[in-house]
Length: 119
Image 1 (cartoon, rainbow, N blue to C red):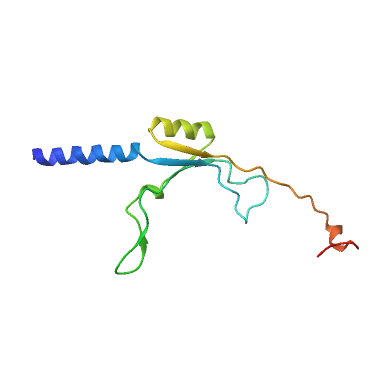
Image 2 (cartoon, helix red, strand yellow):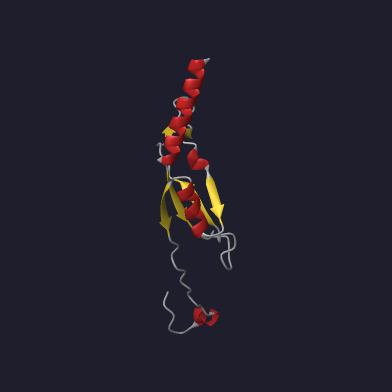
C-alpha cells in the first residue's frame, strides 16, 4: 500500500512539473470568413497550450493522435490582462500575439462600371 502512495505522489509531482514547464500562446482569434460586422464572436482573448509532443500515426488504423492532451484545452478571457494573470498564477510561460490592425478598403459599386477600370 505504501508503494502505491509513493507512486501516486511521484506521478502527481511529475504532472505538476509538466504543467509548470508548459508554454501557452495568448491571442485574439481572427474573424471567420463567414462573419461580417464588428468582430462578432472574436472579442475574447484565448489561451492555448503549445503542443509538447508531436502527432503520430496509429500503426493499425492510420489515425493521427498524440499523447499530449493539453492541446485540446482552449480558455477564453474577456481581456488580455486576465489571460496574462491566469498564465502567471499557474506558472506558465506565455507568448502574446497582438492582433494585426484591420485594413478597410472603401469600395464604391459605381467603380465596377468606370471607363478607366483595370481588370
